[in-house]
Structure formats: C-alpha cells, structure tokens
Image (tube, rainbow, N blue to C red; front, side, top):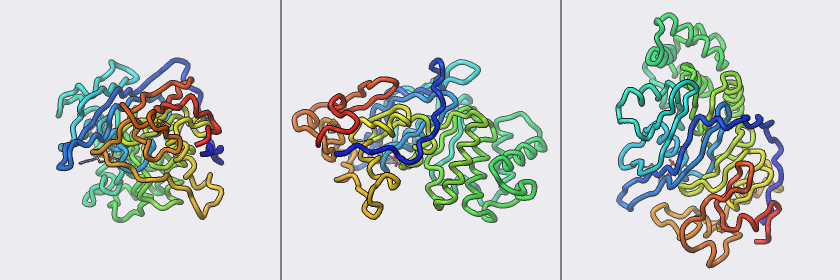
Length: 357
Ligand SMILES: Nc1ncnc2c1ncn2[C@@H]1O[C@H](COP(=O)(O)OP(=O)(O)O)[C@@H](O)[C@H]1O
Ligand code: SF4
Ligand SMILES: [Mg+2]
C-alpha cells in the first residue's frame, strides 16, 4: 500500500504551548450500550488531552464512537448507554480541576458546566433551535441562564454576537424566527448561541454536515476565525479528514470505539503511521489521482457486538499479519515521539512510504 502524499492545504499550525497546558483530559473512557443484540462497546478505552487554545479534531467513519465521546464530556449519555469507566477532567483557566465523571446527575456544577464553561454545537443543528421563539429570545435565554446581566444587556450582547458570526442587520434579524432564515444563517445563530457565554471549551459535532458545500466552507472559516479571536479550545468532530487538514492543530483518529492514531495534524497528514489513517487519507478527494475512482477502504466495519480478536482493523488491513494481528487484545498506543502515537503492532516496521503490503 502506498503512503498518501501531502494534501494540497496544510494549515499553519500554532506552535505547541511551552508547557503542557491541558484544558480537558479524557482517560480510558468506556461507554457501553445494552441492546437486544448484546453489549455494544461504543467507546472502549479512549484517552486524549486537549491543549488550551487549540483545535483538536476527532475523526473516523460513521458509527466509530465520535458523538458518544462528545456526549460523555457533557454527561449527556442516556440509557441504554452508560459510562462504564474512565475519567474526564476539565481544567478551567481559573480555579480547580473538575472531575466531570465524578459529578452528580442534576448537580449545580454540571448545570454550570453545560453551556457555561463547555458548550456544544450538536450534529443536527436545526433541532437545536426552537421554531416558536425568535432567535434573539433563544440567545438571550442562554445568556441569562449563565450570566448576571439585565435583559437589555443580554439583548445587546446577543446583537454583538450575531454581528460577530456574520449576520447582516443583526439589530433587525434578532427578532426573526428560525424559519425566516436560510440554513447557513441558522447555523450562524447556533454558533452564536454556543459562543455567547464565552465557553473555555467548544465541542462542535459535525457542525456543517447538514449544509451545502459552499456554506460549509464559509461556516468552517467563521469558526476558525472566532476560535482565534476568542482563544476557545475547540473539539471538532468530523468524518472528513479534509476538514481536519484545513481546521485542526491536533487530531485523534478513531476506529470502532478506540483511538488508533493521534498527534499533530501536520505530522499525521505528512507521515501517518497507522494503516487505517493511511487508508482514510488515500480516500480524500483532493489526494486521489483519479478523481472519478476514489479508492474506498476495503471491506465493511465489523459489528461492535462481534469485535474481531486482536487488532479490530485486521479484517480490512493490507498490512495484517496472521498470528500477529488477529490474536489477543487490541494493540496499545505506541509512542513514535513528539506526542505522536499509533495503536498497531507493526508501527515500527511501517515507516512513511510504507512496507509492502
Ligand atoms: N442510543 C443508542 N443505542 C444503542 N447503540 C448506540 C446508541 N447510540 C450509539 N450507539 C452505538 O454507538 C456507536 C457509536 O455511535 P456514535 O458515537 O453516534 O457514532 P459516530 O462516530 O458516527 O458519531 C454506534 O455505532 C452504535 O453502535
Ligand atoms: S495491528 Fe496489524 S492489522 Fe492492525 S493496523 Fe497494524 S498491521 Fe494492520
Ligand atoms: Mg456522530
């Protein structure tokens, strides 16, 4: 298998912070669902840390556990799902670390965290807005829930934020209902609502999937600009490595409930070391030599209730070695240096450029 070449656009990556300044740490997170088909290990031992002020992406095919990871951070997992283990720790800029996994359901701390220090743009943005209230009322409500300001101050703040997200004539449009706006404008409102309380962490779960391509690019550009201005730490969830290349500083690649590779975007785009990341990169339209025939990853994702032994990617991996890759437990993350890790037993054999499959 050939290694992917450099994509056309690699973002100018922010320098790594001098010292490790982590805003969110996830350690060995396990989230299982109990269904008629059995125990579904949607997230099974996920660990990563977000550096303050940077954009970290979580990328992987549909169903690999990205949204479940995101929902766990705000403790939004509902039955039949359950957080079975692990720790999620938030380090506010000022104040003591908060062990989110240890907080009581319905506690004041959890309420303050949601939409206050940590806010989320959901995968289905249109459902995030109420059709029967004006956008202004909805943004003001978010402000009044978390900040001690008057109604008039909240309204002024909402107008400022709507202007910031690029809504022309915000003073008038604040009194419109969502149905009076286009999909792109509504998504700008959702972003305004998520950012108006100046969260330290913004989780954006596939924030543009429902929009057409031109609007997607505009919204992504807007989010990146706001992230720069406000210094928000962003967790960007996407199935699209192209979006990762354009937006993110750091990336964690997920496959079947586990992280298989992580590190800085620059490094991973240039020199991926896990065969799954290599395959994802090869299927990027901007990289495919023949755009008519995009290579897809061979085989289909196995069922989460019937995980194969050994490396979960082995039935689809061109490098899979019988007796080595298809036995025992899934491979642990191995460090390749500079914060770059990959979970593959052949990682030291698979150099950039690739050994022959
Ligand atoms: N409500 C649910 N009931 C049962 N299984 C679920 C539920 N939500 C998620 N899952 C399981 O968790 C897996 C990961 O889901 P999700 O995190 O939403 O994937 P994605 O990476 O596409 O965001 C799914 O493939 C599914 O098996
Ligand atoms: S452990 Fe084996 S099957 Fe898994 S990614 Fe590495 S080479 Fe492929
Ligand atoms: Mg999802």
